[in-house]
Length: 534
Image (cartoon, rainbow, N blue to C red; front, side, top):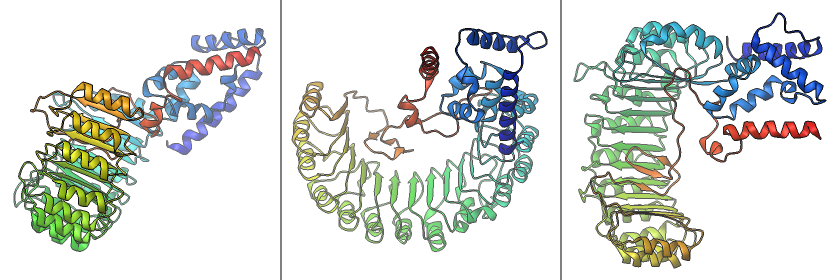
């Protein structure tokens, strides 16, 4: 099977349709569905109109299907046999409920969807997942697979991953979470999938903890890897050989992975000097690790989230050498070890700074003035849980931060007077989000909206302090530390037996409403009907 075979089938089906329309119509020897199609066509010809949809080439119909939502695609597949065939052969993304009873359905599913390149296999935590045999069957029928997501597939073993990797050597992206295979299975993928560019691993239960842990990587995949994301691993440092061997690595994300990363970062940076993005959340790292990271002169994005051993000195070392820094997120966790001194170092050395998120950090006018003066491109600013940010600081930001477009203020001692300052400042401001600021009232927010008609003002006065701090003001997408810049509506892959999104159309495109939902199908049919009458 494959895309080339699918294209040939589409062309043959189109030619067959044209030949059938040129023959006398008889319903004696065809199924009821075909009979209904024929009767409808005869009625349209009697009325003097033409069936324009049937005249569409299969390739055009496939393009239309790819612009629809998953639910509408499924509805369209029920219209007739031709639409069923085209919809199946033009679907490249598929999500399956990966319970053990999926196995007998695999041949029929992948006979219909024979061009799938992006596959998600998700199992409920309380259910028995597919095993090695099912994964091997899938890999034999999806040899063009480039993306695989595994969630809670606890019955997959190292042997199953080895067989899969040998059949799907073109894999470019692998994401696995709460799976039971271990280092041998991961190494099997790294040794066979030389095109692998993105690897995301979360709670891989088969990795042995402690000194006996088998090292992972580098394998042939290390040459192509550009993104590595490790989450909630008891012994994440066993991925050290892979990280060190990935010389073309651009993005490294470490979330809640135990181990002393201060010892590993100097080795990583010595071999991998081209990283542009580093995320660190709740890992054991201090100024020693930051000093090593400072040698990544191409670094543009840095997230320090709940790393209490990192201080002003470490941040200053990064700022001094990483002059290309564009996005900086700091969650100080109320440790008060990063403040004015570190932020002033950033202001002095990082003129390209566009996005700054401060959670549990207490900046004053001194650092804010330096940032406003030396960072003319600062467009997105979030201040959360900062005891030192009040009306005076917001007024200063309104006057000095000329380029600011999005501002988020959460759990700060700000009042309606701060909102009044924003009304006459920040000429490029397009969005303000204020949350859990006791002094800001709905009247103050309404006045700001009325004064700046084009400004979007979101006010949430819920004072439940138990909620995790977050911010929303940027265009970097949802972050793991709760920051959301800006809020993007993500297309979740469903867990139904046959549910998918189409061929990678962006969600923002769907939100425009240009070609989505039943409204599109209904509108198209109305236009065809009206054109036939004219």
